[in-house]
Length: 508
Image (cartoon, rainbow, N blue to C red; front, side):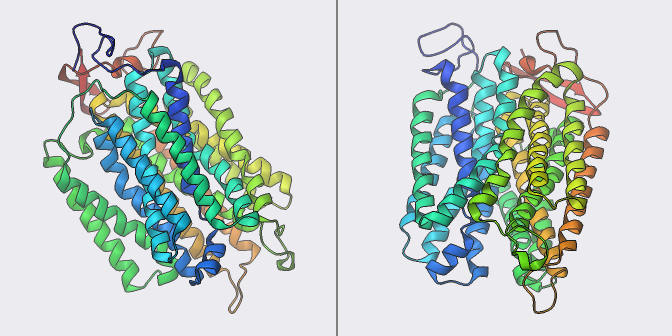
């Protein structure tokens, strides 16, 4: 809704002003980075939690699965709630859930309460798309593109920072300290959001598609459950196959329902746009590569020396090996911004994906020195950072403001699904290359796993090259990618030709 004049509380477009305009982007980045770091808590602490909670190691893996499932279920719903006047409330509600979950996990006397806490922490995985929606709505035109790109890379930056932090906590402190640390971060983020993020929005709210939410969340939960637990249940077990088949069937029903709904949870017609489709397919395939390498490096560096390979590093040292991922992502964000102005979004996306593919191939044949692993994680960060920086820009460029949160949350879900697929593939490969009666896989397992993830990244390159439309919208020198025009407030819908089909566009 557009305003007719300015008031102390609103701007020219009728949007609420932030109390601290200069701190809006740093505040959004702090919030997104905090929840990204929190989402990585758990992986290095699985053995410690299993020991202290007196549960089997396989059961303790549910502290990862619970967060993953909650993030996948909450993401699309939060994305839709964020497309309208309830945006700040949705962010605050999700952060309050993360805070409650962190405290519950820290004090939980029983393992099931710890799982409930980890599930509540998973709500934070859906906040990055809402931060992007706020940036699109409230940042000045000259800062919007770089702001959205910076927010998008918080996923990889947070992963690179989260592993060393978790490693230090797991090695030197009680695991509960990690959850108290998460509670502190979340409390700070909640205070920042309450003070800085505007309450208003340039778009009116829409009713929540409850049926679509149930179908999408159920289908995603079933598939992610099978992928995360397949190695424990067995990939040919009835439970695994049943979850996969049931999840696929429910998702097919969701697609049919979304095409008929007046206000769908995720607008499938926009997702089919070739540029948006390129961002989403690449997100899925890049997720396989990124999370696959993080898992492989984490395992490889801790292998005992008697295995004939590996480095037998501590959890803290392993975390430091993964930290260059964050530095590489930050470096790539700056480089991607300059490249977009020169060669365009459609060319930067395959370049970032290609760098990930090459990095994985190199690591598959040469990983016998710690320096190589450090360089490999740094290059991974560069590739992932460049690709993640431009994905939301492609989406924002081709969807109206009223769909920003929903469309970008769907992209985030696909990154998560890709990570689950990568983890499942790696688990299967490790198991296949572990000698009977042994616990440590052969070195060849890592070669095969890295080549498989490299293959997924290569398919991402193909998608990033082949899917985007050849024709682009006319733009001016101050808006080379059409992002400012795409962010204007809604007055009446107008169809605009984009790529291979007709996509709804907001017009002023």
